[in-house]
Length: 195
Image (cartoon, rainbow, N blue to C red):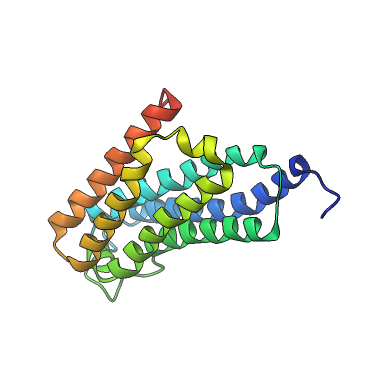
């Protein structure tokens, strides 16, 4: 591997990340398809479905943000392993929203609220992982986000702590709506257009 240039290594790392992210997207889409195919099999939940949308967007954004790694001049096994762990964390979020069976629960909302500690624990980890990922990409990459980035991590962690501690559906509805609004803000700020 030492003889490969960074531009030769990047596609290989990106393929592995893409496979993991693709599995997460597949899980979420299969859950949505299952809800459409069998709408009465389990009780529908707006909170669960909004988190499915949000994590689907998160998976796509991760895949997109990782394009910045093509500028990385020095690849190590540690960086590659870190990126795979980050992708696996996102996959696990998708998997927690895509249970194989919810028969032992009172629908998707009950499942989500009873698994919220796992979900929001992993979700909190993504804020830390994202900070490390941005540092790997370099100071110029980090600085382009400005003050917003310094606010996002503490607020995201606070949101996760509140969501872990509360089983109130209104708290969880507010949390997912806030996260979707946050994602819309970042998309509009850095991608200039949604379409």
